[in-house]
Length: 286
Image (cartoon, rainbow, N blue to C red):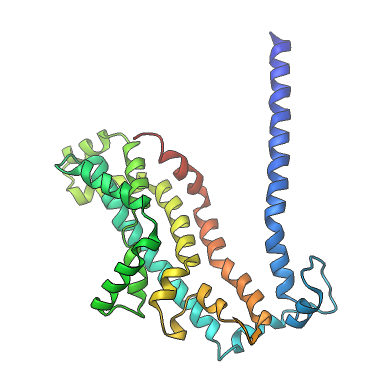
């Protein structure tokens, strides 16, 4: 029996070592593009055009002058793009989390007529490609005079179907006795949600915060259609304008791309503890 346990223990350790090694190699390969991007941001644009893609560090031509150029490029327009992206990301994420969590909680905990129909419509919306909705959504914005505004950009994402689905599935994994006990103690419906349910939904909020921030920060197509003013462009749109048929501003493009990664890294570092727990817990029941 002891021999069998030792063999099983050795097999488990070998599997752990192999899995860790594989993950380390995968992580290293995934970091290569970021390494190349950072090295390229330290080199003059002419050096990149002359020698092409290179993963070697050349101290003779590398410096942080390109990052200083971000402040002077077209009168500091890059930081206007940065501010626009941050405003849209924060508003879209916060409003989306609040509204979607409330809708998902209602669909999971309350019994009312038409509940299944509403959830079916949510599932159908998840299956519809966003590109199909572009034209009708844009016509709605024109009639509402919301073109070239931040609210026009975030309007289609105020209550994302995927968030509703995720929060509903997560709430279904929570014991219904929490709701009943809170009602016995005299809590109102809003009190139950904000004082009882929200603390238990922190892992779901963490996971959805990261995904929502990434989707908002990297979104290109819809902001490109809605926004017209150069100073209101988001990072993806603005960085695209640095590449033209008349010349490419690699001196700004590469350091700008490095700086664009920073907010998402910060969000992930703050929400990483709840990210995995939220993704796994949301699919336990339903």
